[in-house]
Image 1 (cartoon, one colour):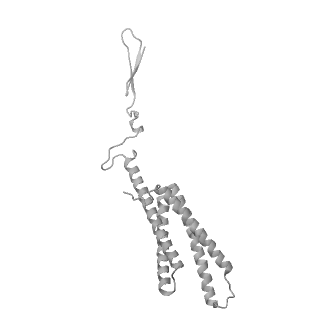
Image 2 (spheres, helix red, strand yellow):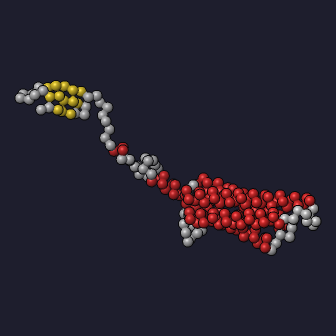
Image 3 (cartoon, rainbow, N blue to C red):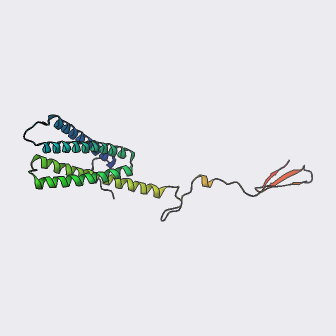
Amino acid sequence: MVVNLLPCMALQKGTMLLAVIDAMISIVNVGTLVIGFLIFDKDDPDFSNGEKIITLVVLIVVTIMCILQIALAFKLYMAAINKNYKSCRLWMIISAVVLIINVLNTTVDTATTDFEGTSLAGNVIAIIYKIYEMLVVYAFLQELKSNEAMALKTSPQLGIRSGSPVFTTEESLQPQHSSYPMQTFNYQASGQTAATTQLGPMVVTGA
């Protein structure tokens, strides 16, 4: 039994909605990072050259990850529309990797730096949302798998299956042409003209 974590709508529509929300969040993050690039002061004396390089590298990496998140959200949206099981499963695998990275990053930052307050709360909310989104997509995957199994079980093209009745197509009920050779002979009946008889299926023609 598939558990729907979105009781107000179907899993397909819920997956599409979450993909749109995911894309919007990633777009906002990209915009924030771009602003960070613009206001970043390379000549700030409070930062050493090494710290400036590390900051720029981190900003670039996070921006790339956000862009990939937008691409993943688009892929999930299209997979939900087309009910593509493989694409949804690929999204699940990549999202699981991203989730693990976020959890490890948040744990390390909390243990080694003064990572608390708004930043910590934002990361925790993002992790919880991603877990919820993955659970919804997983339920959608189970629904697709269940529907596929049901379609295979009731398909008339499968013939004999264990525990299911035998189905025959309309074409299999059509009469087949006989493979027997046609035989003909003539006979003469009293008061009748000559007639030709064909055996094989039997067809008699005469006057």
